[in-house]
Amino acid sequence: MTLSEVLSQLEALGSERMRLQNAKRGAHDNQYGVKMGDIRALAKKIKSDHPLALQLWATENIDARLVAILIMKPKELSDKELDEMVKSLKFSQVSDWFNSYVIKEHPNKTAFREAWMNDKNPWAARAGWNLTSSLINKGAEGFDLNAILDRLEKEMGSAAPEAQWTMNFSLAHIGIHHPEYRQRALEIGEKLGLYRDYPTSKGCTSPFAPIWINEMVSRKK
Image (cartoon, rainbow, N blue to C red; front, side):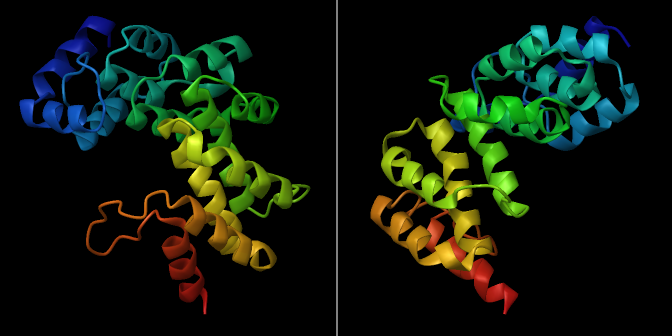
């Protein structure tokens, strides 16, 4: 399938309703407004196609980039390409898919983690803290969790919203998976108050760290 064919199909699948929903979540105008299920179905039809993925990515179109993420080969991206892609992100949905499907499969992701955590680009910081939260979730061997909590307490309140989201994941995962640090994580969450009033759908857990931590700990009992 060619670039023009993919873009034509995405345009046909788009809807004004989805475009408006995306816009409310911070999306820019370069989008067709395609449902996630249709994105996945189209990517499944194309299968793996790294050159096409790079062409789709270059359009900066939200829907094209989501398809690109699903059909690219992360291990074929150079370090320079990966870094440039992270810093070109502009929408949370694309960022989160890129973190989940591309960065986590890249062989040099560990080398980028700390650099991105300290980067002024908010999307790079989001990616760095996402990698950190994932490692904490898996056990955090060799991590100085006190030092991470120090950083979160000092920096999270004034961080860019894009980075705050995955910093909050790191805080919650420390509290959930590491009982010896739980009380401090709860105290930091209460002190900062981030996402305290976040609208949460019925049946979902609030991202407010104290509620999230206590809810997940109670499920383990």
